[in-house]
Image 1 (tube, rainbow, N blue to C red):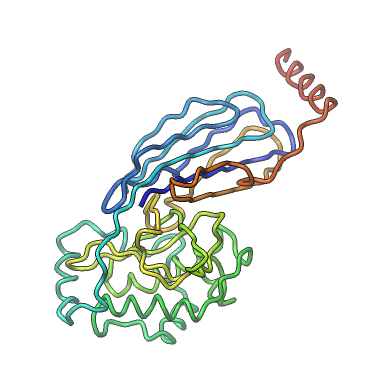
Image 2: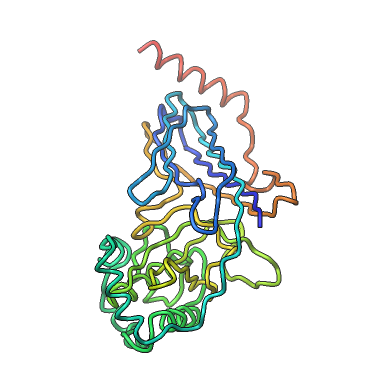
Length: 317
């Protein structure tokens, strides 16, 4: 399966800012059953974009916009090919717990076993753990299937009830949240069992017949657990799914703090607003950026003249 992906992010500032420094994790991964065939990241205003690979194998693009501006748009375009992975069994043998312990002892997976900023113990998490009977029993795979399904039924998907900075107690108290919350809660439940678990940031290709709860014009998040004989297996508690060819992986980390699609700083005294738009489509359907982000009214002549005067005054100082 081939996908075209268009991901646009726009920052708007209440007053001109003199410089923006930012980094982006938007290039889909090339590993396993997924390959990123083409990728381009551009900015408006224009900038020189460089990249490096972080400690988890994610591609990080970074740039500096030195000119004064009131708006910054980051546009990422990608072509990804996905080969359908083999179907998972419903369960493993009970001896899989011992095989998992041997696997953990052989691999450097400490980062995905320890508590992290967004995925850590709390009294509310302990209460959920008791409710869902999260303990070593049966086998690791069947237990993860069960936790995924029970989280889907226990928590409501409700956009705008939490923010990207929300800790898990907020969603635990409300029993609702978004994909980021679902992923963090599941990770915090699973790691104490000795199952390495990591956060995945990416996209989900939506079809009408799938009835996904998550939003189709946004990024998505789910969980990957390391299992003996299977490697890293994706579980999507938001939609009660095993991650397969509709789940397009962009970055992995301990939690969201390691893999935000964009983060940065700017120089100036201004408030900022953020708009994000995502389109994921089969390549047979041409992709257009129309409607990805809402239209923004062009600056008036008076606003343009005022901004020019401000720039001229700064140059004379």
